[in-house]
Image (cartoon, rainbow, N blue to C red; front, side):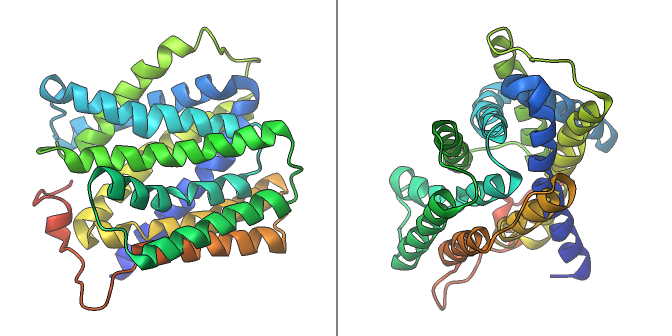
Amino acid sequence: MRVLDVARLLTLAALWGGSFLFMRVAVLPLGPIATAELRVLLAAAALVVWLRVAGVRLGWRQDWRLFLVVGTINSAAPFALYAFSALHLPVSYLVVLNATTPFFGALVSAAWLGERFRARAALGLVAGVGGVAMLVRLGPVPLASQVVWAILASLVAALCYAVAAAYLKRQARTPAPAAVATGSQLAATVALLPLLPALPPVAWPTSGEWIAVVMLGVLCTAIPYLLYFRLIADVGATRALTVTFLIPAFGMLWGAVFLGETITGTMAAGCGLVLLGTALIFSRPTGVRAPAPDAATGGRTVR
């Protein structure tokens, strides 16, 4: 990859890793639903402005069903689940659990799309499960009931991402990626709104907590979407997905620097197993070529 593409990849990993940091700060006064609602609302607002400036058409009338499904499964549900988990888990746990997304992606693709589940992917799945088990049983956080529920919520959130990706693969026609990002954030805003009365904020956020909310919505959601789509257009989906390898390192770093969280040897080992499993799942057998960048984006130009 070019130096510019590598810089985009590192920036993307740093921003997505930071989302768990800001989530931990914002969720304390706002609760899971309001945190997720404000996140998608701010992201949607920023992306709508960008679409207008870039001259990209949203196409809400013909694609609102797709936006609603993707927005619910890929944003509303996982953002709320991760926000709930952030009440009980440190950032270092959250980023490792988020890195299990490729495992669920391999399983969902095999079960739903009929894709071949290779022996190397199975080995990767075992390594990843072992990494999560090491983190859960030997990590520094006591295994209380709320911690178990938080871990399960994070795993379900990772599964949501995998299901949404498989759903998009099954569509005969999908809008431009930037339109999917914007439309899905708008739909996620609508999907979360009815849940607010049942789980309202518990306190009015301080100025620092409001800053965390804005950072979560704009810096860690809207901007990364744009970087990710640009990366897919330039280097292809397969290479762009290597961001998954980098997010845990940045997430652990931000948690240690800004929240004073401890990174233990057990946590590092568990993270290493998860990343090894991810590498095995993404790796291709000898002689199998990765798709070209234009094939990965369906021949469309992403702006």
